[in-house]
Amino acid sequence: MTKIAITGACGRMGRVISALINDRVDTIVCAGIDKLAERYSGFEVVKSVFDLPEKPDVLIDFSHPSALPDLLSYCKMNAVPLVIGTTGYSDEEKQQITAASAQIPVFFTFNMSLGINLLAELAKKATQVLGGQFDIEIVEKHHNRKKDAPSGTAIMLAEAINGELDNKYHPVYDRHSILKPRDKDEIGMHSVRGGTIVGEHEIIFAGHDEIITLSHSALSREVFAVGAVNAAVFLAGKPSGLYAMGDLIAD
Image (tube, rainbow, N blue to C red; front, side):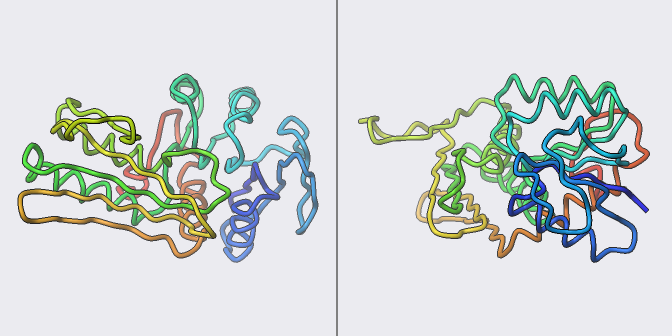
């Protein structure tokens, strides 16, 4: 039985993860952390990670980048594995996550969906075949409450594609003030925010007289919760290191 603490427990993702964990026989929520500290299930919710009533086997984080310093501090002090589902981190914060993985096991990916990670692999394969001949554009759509843009997943997809292009391409986020034709070494990044869209990502390879489109649509937040809980069970007992969805799939 894997004891899991949830950061951001009172948020939408936190509640979905809690319900999913309760439906499994191999996991249990031992506590939640949220500034609201609202108890809505059979576990205690505290305002600070340092107030946890017991040490969890794994901590799942779906909160806010501002919570990162305390989470890393607590997990390093108590040798607790950390699954990070939060997005919107700066380069400096990503470096802090990587540095922490030298002391504790950290599972860090921009998207917990198996389908999205498959999309990234398909995009890499398409880039191997089409790169240099087709223009590449990425369009991501999310609900109107999402704060960061472009999404962490869109950035992950762009980086996966650019890796196949020897990192010679650069992202372009806004063209309204660019009065010239599109450069061949661009990866266009476009964000749409509206309604209750859970998450849609589309990769467009536009060539001469033909277009190839790869896309993924998340119909509920449960797809991310399933990935996060599977990651937590996978991470429990693992040695220090930085893990991602590829490690989980290969396990």
